[in-house]
Structures are given as structure tokens and as C-alpha cells.
Amino acid sequence: MKGLYLLKLGGSIITDISKAHTAKEDVIRRIFGEIRRSLARRDFNLIIGHGSGSFAHIPAKKYRVNEGLRYSYSMKGAAVTHQTAKELNLIVNRIAIESGLNTLPFSPLNFALGDQGRIKTGDISQISGALKRGFIPITHGDVVIDLERGVSIASTEEVFRFLSGRLKPEKILLATDVDGVFTREPFRKDAELIKFVGSRNIGDVLSAAGSSAKVDVTGGMKTKIALLYEMCRQSSCEGIIFNGNVKGNIMKALSGPGPENATRVKG
Ligand SMILES: Nc1ncnc2c1ncn2[C@@H]1O[C@H](COP(=O)(O)OP(=O)(O)O)[C@@H](O)[C@H]1O
Ligand SMILES: [Mg+2]
Image (cartoon, rainbow, N blue to C red; front, top):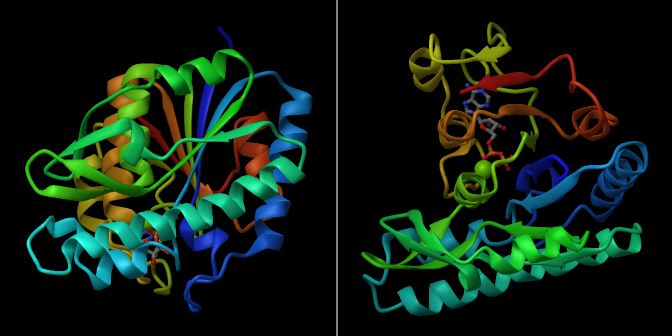
């Protein structure tokens, strides 16, 4: 089988995080143009995941969905959060199809089960069946039924961690709104980009990485790098965190060694 790439489009790049429920359709269209050109150059299998940005993070935070079914409003919160995640997914998937890609959406709520915030089990037969037939599955961060908490939130990175354990990708590519993991918050003057992460420095990197400066209920850069390192170790693959706002970077990541300014992870 052809090599498999997992590509995440961060909620911070595909939505306007300062405005609730606002997708950046022009950015999404530019990104799918890059994906299409990469697929025309090289033949590879691809699964796309996208974050929730100013869509599902807002109700997830308001209703404290990740705490589970604890409050009178928890069930409503789970319902609204999933609906909101699907609304962004519909926009992303529509633009993918308009861009000439044969994508099929897969919501984790319908294929995965959580246990204390981690995906424990799931059925990937539809996703792998779609891949084998040449489709591009699109998944996203979502509410999942959780064996312990009732419900919990699975970030796109957590969905990738689950999928990578089963599907053994060659590369895991995380496009976000900064160049990679920095030695401190990237807006600080003395912050330096950490270009390589491996067993020797993962401890230091984890203490440098913080949560998101924006609305993000799943832990921002800290959980991103922690989960990426775990997936790369589990599947002996390469991981890259890079800036998806820089034009051409998605194409570089999919059709070559990836952008020069980025964080590369070896498990
Ligand atoms: N050490 C760090 N290096 C890079 N980003 C960091 C760091 N600490 C905190 N962050 C924050 O993490 C954000 C990226 O995570 P997040 O907002 O969850 O992105 P995404 O929407 O792609 O998941 C950055 O924009 C930044 O605000
Ligand atoms: Mg995030």
C-alpha cells in the first residue's frame, strides 16, 4: 500500500479565532489547492483532520464538556458542541470537494469511544475502506462518549494518535499558526524555535510548551507536542509541526522534506 500521511489543519488557521463561528474560507481554499497540487505530483494516501477554532471550542468551554456529564447542562453542552464541530466540518468538506478532492467526513463521535479523555477503542474499518478505494477521509476534534466521564472531548491530535496506532502512517503533519514549538511563548522576543525533538530533549520541550493563547479546550502546544511525540514513538514515523499560514508550506510538507522553519519530531 502507498505511504500514508496524516495532515492536521489547526483551528487557529482555518477559523477567525476572534469571531465566534467564523471560518476563513479563502484560507481553507488556498490550503486545499496546495493539497491538490501535492497529490498531482506524488501518489500517497492522505487523512485530513481539522481543529475547531472559533467553532466547537466555544460551547465546549462554556458547558465544560471535557468534565463529563457532571452538570445539569452537560448533555446540552455535548449536543451543541458536536453540532458546532460538524458545522465547521461541513464547510471544510464542501471546500475540499469544490477544490477537486474526493473527501469523505468521519466524526469521532461515530467511530471512537473515550476513556478519561483518551480514545480507548474504535472501529476504523470504514476509514481504511475509504482509503483503500482512493478517498480522502476528513476527521476532526469532537465530543466522544466516554466510558468513565460520560462524554469527553477528543482533540484532532488525540484522534490522530488513535488512528496512527492502527494505520501506521509514514508522516504526521500538524499545520498551526506558529512555526513550531518555541523555547517560550512565541510572541516573546527571546523565544527560539526548537527544530528537533527526540528522546534527548522531549522533557525540556514539554516544560517550555504552554497552552493556547486562544480559546482551545484541548491544551494548545503542550498537548500537541506531547501527543505527536507519543505517536511518532509508537509508529516509528516522522512528525512535523509547521506554520500553515505561510503560503506553500502545506505543499512543502506533503511533497518534500517540509518547510525549513519547523519542529521535526522523531520518536
Ligand atoms: N512554547 C510554545 N511554542 C509554540 N506555541 C506555543 C508555546 N506555548 C504556547 N503556545 C501556543 O500554542 C498555540 C498553538 O496551539 P493551538 O492554539 O492549539 O493551535 P491549533 O489551532 O493549531 O491546534 C500557539 O499559537 C501559541 O499561542
Ligand atoms: Mg489546538
